[in-house]
Image 1 (cartoon, helix red, strand yellow):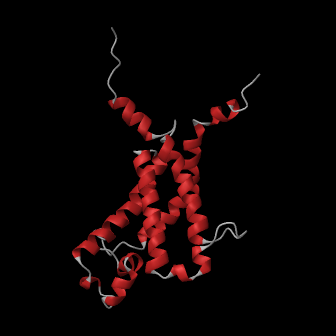
Image 2 (tube, rainbow, N blue to C red; image 1 turned 180 degrees about the vertical axis):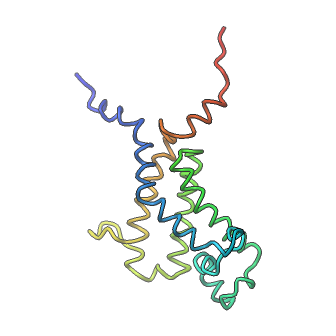
Image 3 (spheres, rainbow, N blue to C red; image 1 turned 120 degrees about the vertical axis):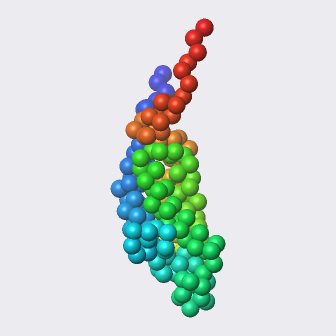
Length: 182
């Protein structure tokens, strides 16, 4: 008698590669485009966030500061800069399969913070179209519908690693110790 799960087990090595490909195809440019809006002017724009960056990440605090970035604290600056860098680097690391598990779980954390900011900072919790609802036959809700799928997609490489076509395999194969022979 044959095992009915055998064909699925053959797919297992391909799942992380497929998940990373789908992440690249669907979400890479979304995150990079968003990160580009946060960069300030000039070559050091990655250290001097745009006013829009503060407005996206700290909407209420930025409004209270009269939309003056100079009124924001050094901690808020640090969070905005780190968030901007994360929005560039974490998706790239997922796609390349570099520190894949760490990058995937980092992206899941990023998406959680992004969702909470959209819901509470920008007031999306009061709008059914932004919040969405499960089991409502409408898959377009931004947070509960779309972002739940994003997180599920990232769980595959997060739990399984980057797969066969990942930089992790090259990096960690090169740094792993040689087997000991008796």
